Length: 152
Image (cartoon, rainbow, N blue to C red; front, side, top):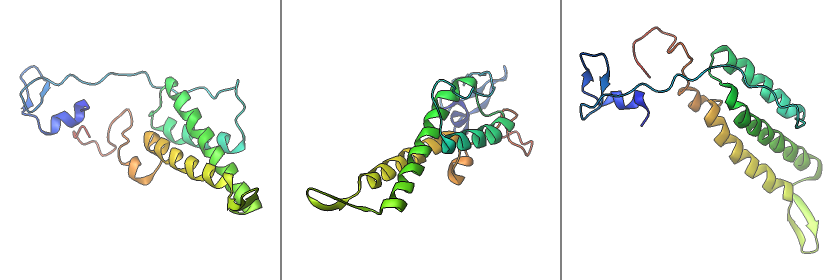
């Protein structure tokens, strides 16, 4: 479990200032990782939808110092997944959900792409706190905005 969650069932704080877990063992604080904005990839072309999402995530998460430079790879996958979803939705709107092939009328391949990209995107959204439910798990570098001592 992450250090903050181990404090919940702990036995309090020792004299040396370290919090303890339920067994009385000290809980070492998590790593203090360097915060900063990831660099937008220039070696791989990102289409309009991917660029739009990248800029939105950087704008929102950067203000809260929630990103690290190394997060760029995961953010790139998030953005390309979103772009793939949008492209599949456009295909469905332009060509319908049914496609005719040698077997007759079947579900169009872009419908499957849309469904898979939607599921993948939702999973990536949880990593970046983009959905309302996942947003509750985000805490900026300065901690909770209400000034409380609660480590969660």
